[in-house]
Image (tube, rainbow, N blue to C red):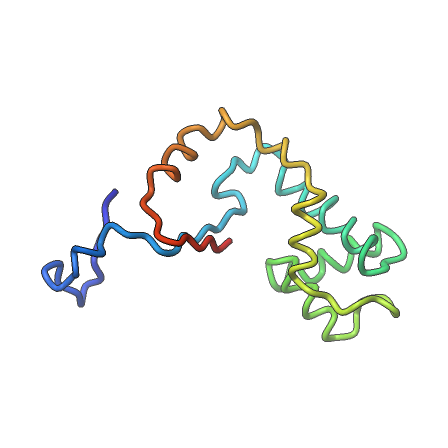
Length: 142
């Protein structure tokens, strides 16, 4: 693994005793850790988002949910952020509960078809790399 220092930090000023300890791993998962061609992104942005909106936010139809999701996704490039703003702007159906991003995350974790991503063998190199990291009390940010 190669670690580079910012321009204003001399490699000799780095405390090497902590240089090999990783405390946080940040992922931008969308089409980064998996192949966009597998269909998972499309599934999440249609079935996953729309079903959540109908099931949990009281949208009257899949079409109405998809239209609002697409409108806000175009502005914010994120379903959760779009739904937060739509909620603030009063665009969710009357009687809908307040939108909470964690509810969307939970819904996706429980309802998305992760088999679209392939099996463990498809990601054996990536899995091996993660397992080789020395992580002290890991935090994973997606």
